[in-house]
Length: 175
Image (cartoon, rainbow, N blue to C red; front, top):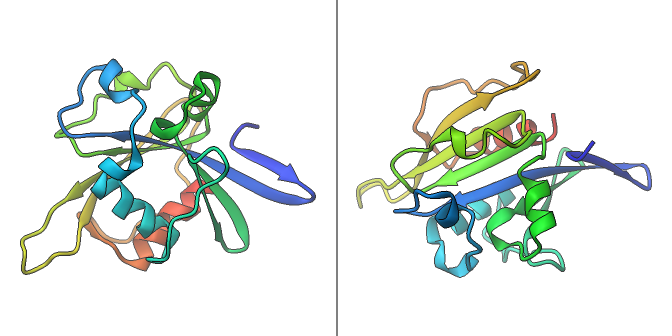
């Protein structure tokens, strides 16, 4: 299974991540390779997933963020940072795909042809200066044989950068 590999007896989970910038609407714009440094809100989200403000460290390909959750390694493969077309294609076919969009809406038909079963669409909401913490809206899309599975998030969005929301994301990544 693409989303889970066993290495030396250790399960290694992989989650695809697609970044869609502001004013990107066409597949050519969305699927273009980007520089991570130009995506401030996306970087903030990656720090949130990691759970600390320490430096983000990526794999040799410069497009894999590895973290541990409940002793399980999770690799987030960042589509827009990959240079290899075959690797990009694989990311869109992982069982779980996170779509981080800074745009107004997400057209699910853009990824409908791929075989991800669970698509988590995340959109940052910039709060007023008196509340500088970024919040997120979340839409969960399931297709094919995917069924709802725990954990369920206990509140309605928008969600602050809190541990409950982070754990929700990471648990969905290792289903």
